[in-house]
Length: 246
Image (cartoon, rainbow, N blue to C red; front, side):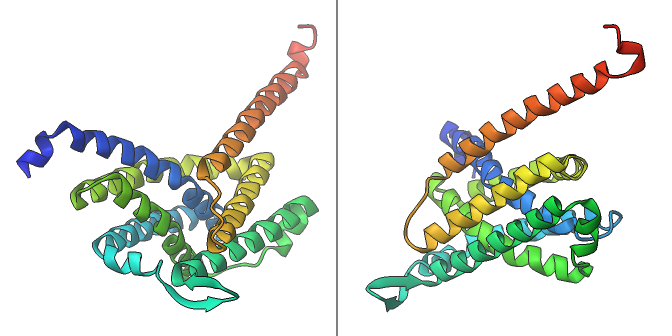
């Protein structure tokens, strides 16, 4: 253990993997925010905390059972000359659900706030947690596969995942509040969910879309939205009576 801690490459891989895990966890936090929004506001922080705890536990369990995770990529049936694995099935169903979820939420949001509140189904706390847990499994596959490819030691992988989850736990509250208070940002987040759903479907069909393209598109859209928010606040400030002549 001492030799592992004394090796600079250990700390380098830990830092790199932690950053990658945070990036891969963005879609997890976004999904967590959207789904927990179906609960009363008082219950949302507890749902987010439990969701992230479930995600952490699932990632650690998958790391310790890495042989089983790898076996999920082995084909179990061939359809139309295409080998199908359980990983393909999981990613396919996950992608379809994310597309369905994003589409229905966008429809309600576009329809207006009153219809959004009336049309959105009320979920029980356990139903939301179950939904989060199922999709934590899907999001955890990419996370665990990335960890195995970036680090050699199990302790380093687990440490990176724990650090990333702590950062996401700290950010989940402010991010959720900001998204709920800004409908345009929420629309951007739902569009990101659609992109992730399409990417999961593509992975299931053995057509890999580099995640860097998706994250760049989202980062660019977020930057444009940030400029829009800044311009809107400046315009609103100028319309105040005391600033009319400025």
